[in-house]
Length: 335
Image (cartoon, rainbow, N blue to C red):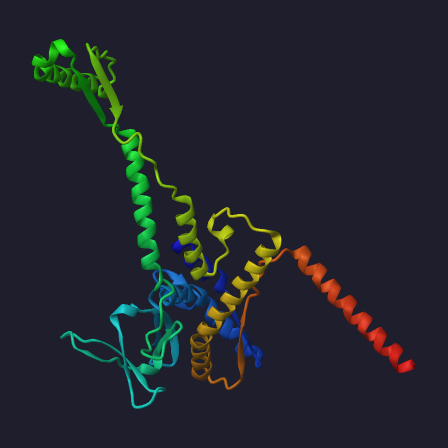
């Protein structure tokens, strides 16, 4: 479920475009963003951002590299790096830092061409610049959830592999032969169970007061629905994804679903603001390499989670309110 939430956030965040004040620069820049190699047979800025955002949400930070070509006169590829292999060394002020990696001897040192490296932290804290993973608070909850699921699995396994307790109560005339009768009962019962496993039916006949019970049949199985739902609610709240998008059929009114969609739109917009600096650095470097000095702006696709009919009705109400306000202002001026 957590993987599904991360993938849905990645899919909903993608879809970036640019607009430039120069039409020729805009046309060429869009073609570059559409066809730039991003490794592993993929192309396009959106493929790069999907891998970049996956690392950002999972590790709390993302590392990218702008690979130059043609003796440094153009951008040849955009690649994502392994965030766990790099360290950050802070300088004399909070704005000065360097990305460091291991050399051939295993020693950490600053990487070359820092201006071609992309680094984005996710919700960085004041203590360190590495960012915070979206999954940071989940291990405790998921550990409890896995224990509950393991216990439920053990109970079902016990129901499918029943153990029996055979109790023999000898009468007054058979007390001296209790040990022998118990041994015979154990042998016959074991033989009957072995035949049952092989698919053969075998009767078990005993003389006297013999009681057979399934071990654990009288025990009460704990209700796991309430604690499981409470833990899932905490996990879903952390991801920001509405429950119905993760296959959870919880009772939800239409108004609550609309509010959840609005919150998800806000969450996606915040993630896009985090990615914007990396996209702007790539576009700015490409424009400078190709001799363009025009301005540009990144444009993201609209996140539409609402019903089109409801959106049209809301737009109609706004226009009606605006028309009524204009008529009232005109009437006040005449008066």
